[in-house]
Image (tube, rainbow, N blue to C red; front, side, top):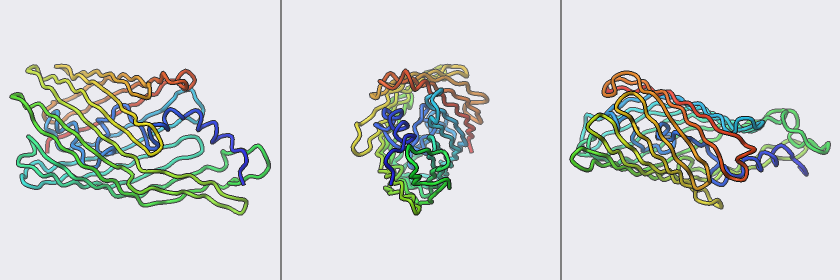
Length: 315
């Protein structure tokens, strides 16, 4: 049996501030990954620009300079049928990959949501479901023990599990300029998993628990084609404190946007980006986000960088 498993212990200590919030992947520009967080979520492209088809990708590297720090990549697609009232639908999916030291997971999800609405342009209540499979990995060849009892051995191991996510989302226009308010609740990993990797010498065991998310926001549009969006992302996992991100984004009249925010876990972030193309037809958006932690682990962990590339269309 394992008596000392140094890499996991060090990794746990280094990532303690993050684990207080969740085990799942984090995002700085979380509005760009709305359908990953909540399968019922309306894309920001639709709320801001009326575009109903979105394809995007992101790359995130966390705590630059720390060996074996987390990295996350995802590719996503989302489509809203906005031509129907009564009940219409959203569909799409996402592929993601996350790695932290010798452990990692890769998942592929399909997503479907029904939207109850009299007119999708003005308001709707969406109920969504995501179904997929996740492969969890332990690279045993990267683990070194203090004693000679090598529990995992030199063979890398993986296990494949099914997974389901559920969510609900509501949006509504308010005011004479058709500003939007929105709110959502979701459990993106509804199936709790007990993962055990075994061989003749022993076993390594880890448990993944359900995570509960809430998102809230408001779009304030101005006459010069700019808008202001305050938003909040609430995260809760059992036996961990509730964590809340507060953010503010301003889309300028031209192609640029800027944003800033902070969290109750003492993380501070900045974001900026540029939008290419006609904002009401087809657009390409390139966004960059930077995080820095002011927790006790922040000075040793370093900053976090995230890049997003999004294509959106009115179809």
